[in-house]
Structure formats: structure tokens, C-alpha cells
View 1 (cartoon, rainbow, N blue to C red):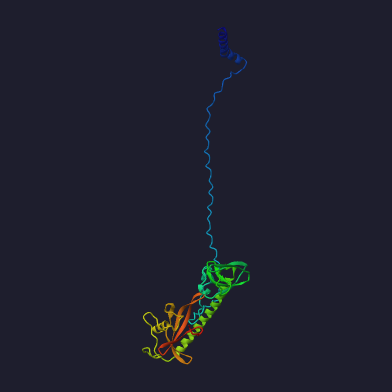
View 2 (cartoon, rainbow, N blue to C red; view 1 turned 30 degrees about the vertical axis):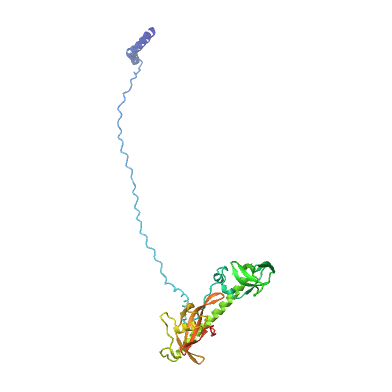
Length: 321
């Protein structure tokens, strides 16, 4: 409690001394009492408004319109070289010979599975390609025979991929040998090629004969109509397009190779002078059986005095059996 009183008393003495004792003493000693300056009110300094930023207007760039580029002068087109003209094929000659078309050997034989039976009508000789022991049989008797490579053997028929063979053309003994163990395919193909040549040549001659026949018909005397008893009577067709006179010749056996059911087409009658004699002629196309199957053949009926005098092949001029 005492310290507080001492402190309070000290403060009071100090205050009285400062207020009442210090001023006379300060005047005597020419001291000035420190009086806090009154702060003058701050003058407001007028701040000039900040100048607006001058926006420089960029000059407008006027884009000049591009001048059209001068068009390149068009040079006159150089004349293109003319393409060589391909000559047009000449018109087909209606009188030209057209060769017959033959099936290839593989098609004809069905890849050698079915050789035309006519080929075996007469035994054909083939050559063995390897040594083989063949069992030859006649009835119940069986004999084994060795055939060396290069040996000739006769072929009488076919059983699948095998050939029916015999040691000779007239031998009653028969055996089987694989087709590929012989030169049978080569023999057959060579014979087929030869027949194709002959058939093509016959067709060419038949074509030439028809042209010559047409030319002869132009110079023949005018035909006379009539019944059927004179040489001048023109053969007539029936309702089916066939010639009764020619059919009668076939049925009577005057020709055996040509049958009514194998005729493919009937020609028109023409009047011709052949070897000094006047005939009515009619060409017929028919199928004939050969060792290689059926082939189309042409024959001519020569009619004189109201009957068929003879049948000839138009290709060779030979008489048709």
C-alpha cells in the first residue's frame, strides 16, 4: 500500500512542478516551453486528372485489289497425229469353207474312262512299257505269261482303267493290263489325229463339190413339173421335209450306211449334168458311226428316170455302201 502512495505522491509533485514551477524558471532562463505544434490541416492538392491515353489510330491499310494475272495465251493446239486406221475385217464370205470342229481326245474318251467301243472293233496292237506277268484265261483254264517291256500285245476291249488284251489278234486267251503300262493312249491319239485330217479334207471337198454343183445347176435346163415317172420330174418333199423317193431307196437297201433316223438335214434338189448325164441331185447330211464315235457326213443322191441311181460321198465322190 505504501509504494502505491509514494508513486502517486511523486506523480502529483511532478505535475505541480511542471505546471507551476517550470514556467517562471523557463522564462528566467529564456527557455521556451515546448508546445506541440498544432497540425495545420493538410491542404488538398488538386490532382490534375490523368490524361487519357491517346490511342493512336493506326492508319487503315487499304488492300489494293490484286490485279488479275494475265491469262496465258492459249497456243493453238497442235494437230494430234492420226492413229493408223485398223482395216476392218473383210465381210465373211458366205461361200468360205468352215472346217469341222472335233472334241479334244480327253473329252472324247471322258478322261480315258470310256474309250469309244468302235475303236475295238478290230484288235489294235500296243507296246508294253514294262515287264509284266499277265494271267491269260480261256474259260476255266488260266495260264501266266510274262510280257517283256517292248513286246507287242493286242487290245480287244476296255474294263475301267484296264485293257483286255491277247497275245495275238485271233488268240482266245484274254488278260487284263493297266492302260498306263502300255502306249495305248499314244496309239489312240495318233489314230484320232489321222481321222480328223481325213474328215476335214472330206468336208473341204464336199464344200467344193457343193459350189461346183450350184454352178452346174445354173447351166442345167429348166425343170419341168410332173408326176414322178420321167427324168425331168423334180423330187418333192413330204410334210416332214423328207423326200419319199430317197426314203424308199434307203428302205429298199440301195444304201445301208444312211438311215432315215440318222439324217440331220435335207438339201434342196438341183438339176445337174454330171459326166454327160442329167440328174436331179439332193444332198443330205447324216451322222455316221466311226471307231471314234459319230461324225457328220454328207452324201448325195443322184436321181434319174424317177429313181435314185446311186448315192455318193460329196467329199470323195465314192459310192456310199
